[in-house]
Length: 330
Image 1 (cartoon, rainbow, N blue to C red):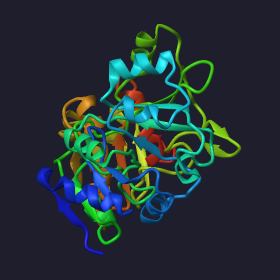
Image 2: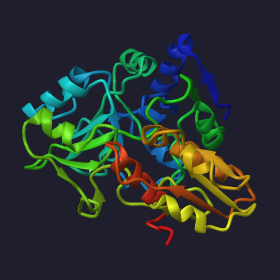
Image 3: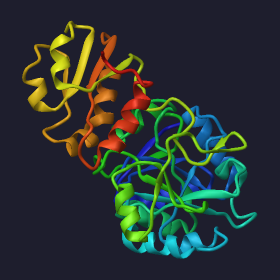
């Protein structure tokens, strides 16, 4: 299968492919998503096959607006209305109870709930509006690999497996959306992202819990990215929590390092990847760094700077801990 790259004016072509049950990757402000018509079970199963992903992991349902979402949920509770008004379109995914019979089990993982998101990307908004139905939107990469922040990343992983990619340049944020579960008594953040639990709590005017486990119903995770190893390059990743510890590492041609510029300046290594000057930039560049070292065949181990400060650090460390399988440099 040829994988075609689409520009803005070719969106109608991409819409026709989705209508036929084909897969098309699409841009968002977070990472690139892999789109299939959410109401077409066969197409949705094709997403799992293309990604090589376990099919008990539910998928995010990507909508053009709140009105489209209303067709697929039992109700839009007051809490959801507040969050939607404040954060949509944007990097926030909300879990609500699904209207029975509207979405296939391949989307929900057989759960009574589903995760809904409205991305802040004009091309994707036009795509879904023109289609008139939601699309599923897991990250457009091979399962377990770092999420794609450019169309080139998607092409590298999925060329020949999907019909097309809508290219809108590099993503703005670079980490997936915050997921908030509104199907439980106390709103709970299941996956941290750019929108922090504190921001969600402020908008809702009530306490918000931060999930530390995998939150499963009958063994099925309630949201993507909770059950399996994620974001991992082939070489093992080690988190370096203290800046001073970089001086203890033996740098050779098989060792890669990703850190802020001020840290890299003190390291004598030819395998360096800049995460930028700030933690916000580091969050944006993390997946790019992991992908870069994954493409370098000589790299046998990767050391990445960890952070414990800044609003984005919980989201950054959540992804990095998964990539490193919890391994820290000591």
